[in-house]
Image (cartoon, rainbow, N blue to C red):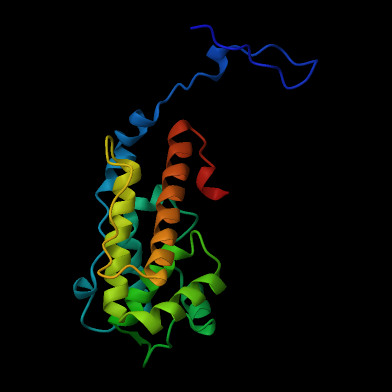
Length: 207
């Protein structure tokens, strides 16, 4: 089949052939890469898998960094720092620690913030949490995020998966759809940044 001629960007530019714009690294090559396989191994701990004992801030940060380690190549900077934790407390996204210790609910909140902050503003995250609090218990809402996040990443990083997947919410609501959209945006961004990095754009995760 005869392809249409590619029109140059300006009268003074050189002619561009189809070969010039042909992809050299196909998406299937990317999803078979070690990076993609690490992302497919990602496990977001469920609520009952989080520590039952309270942790100091440094221990919480280490836990969070360990959870997200498979996604490091697709992240923008560190997942969590002491100053971030302090800012989330000041913004009322996170309750203040008691005697410098953080419990399971606070750890769960921080893990979810680390996901949402990749695609949402702090004010938008605050709105989501406020809606969630009126609709679902913390453990139920957290486990929903965990399940949908893992499924969204499999959707983007697997070959031959169905383009659609059913919502795992026991009752689909406006709130669950908002959360699912945020998780889907995170997975899409992770795929995009990872693919750009795989293509050789080393600064992809820094912009």
